[in-house]
Length: 232
Image (cartoon, rainbow, N blue to C red; front, side, top):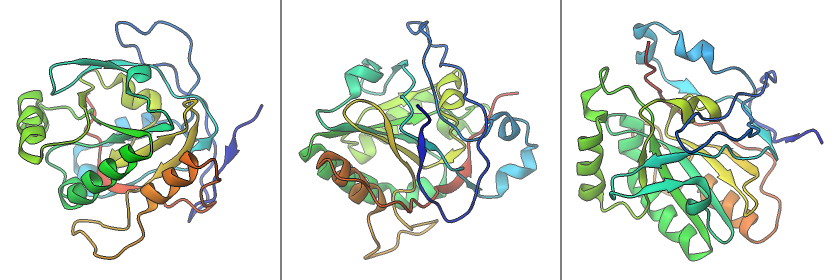
């Protein structure tokens, strides 16, 4: 069955499916869903990192890619262990990005609210720490303690998970229903490098609809933020 598409602010061509994440405990064949290849982002020159990156349109309804990753809480988490009774949100994020820093209070607020309705949240940092040392694992541990993050903060050191999901920027959200099918991809809200007060909670409202077995709004706004810092 062909996956359906949510409507976004701009058209984006559909691309090929990406391979599974090659994490140590994940060798099974898994489908994925980026609408265009992520390789073009990996090949960008360093100078392009200074420009904000916008997420492409996703193929809604596709299956989540399994993974096994270490986290700042000292535990190792899998996709299945992270899933909540009504779904899961995966947020590709990092330490240094000003877009992440600005929206962190809103993300924490929404993560706590989503947990109350059976939807878990997990953050994943896939950045190359040799480009930004602030994104090293020890700094991730410090950030998790500083913010008292109410969700696991995972380290994708090989970047295989980010590539499998087609993630391109931080913060970028992937929202899944209880069956781990993609239902939302996009922003937390309209905040950019400064948090905006009294804006629509795009992520929360979409996931609340999913938890209540309703369809989220057709119009899903793309994430905009710092590009993921890819390894050579």
